[in-house]
Length: 161
Ligand SMILES: [Zn+2]
Ligand SMILES: [Zn+2]
Image 1 (cartoon, rainbow, N blue to C red):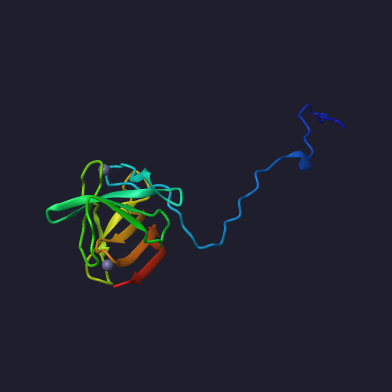
Image 2: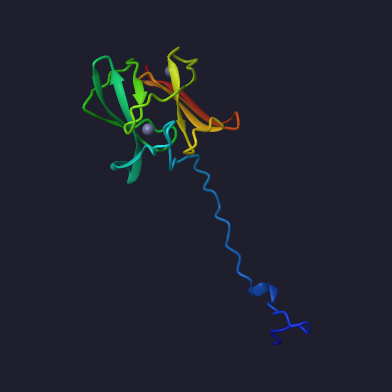
């Protein structure tokens, strides 16, 4: 087989070109978050608490004079949680902050399910509202949504109370 064309350029038969196969998206409907940031760009993912071997989203929560750590499952729509240093009751309204810089997560919108506020977790380190996640600050209210460029990608509205 000739390796060079008459012009001197290398000839590579088409079927020898390896193209990376596109990974097929599994249609399980599960969205697993891989990064989440506070307004100052701190990554909120934490390896020390894991859900099914996935790192959790670690948040500082304040309720009156109590404060502690709330670790959430990174699977969107999975409301598994672990609390450290605080015990939460259904209906508690939490002040949710970054565990690194203590900055309160900004309000995303009012929750239309329970009238509390939804706070913003950014999906990129530059605090861009075009890609973010909104979660309700009330314990037990499972209203959350993920948006990209104002479009709602997915939302979960489940109130267990
Ligand atoms: Zn921070
Ligand atoms: Zn709510």
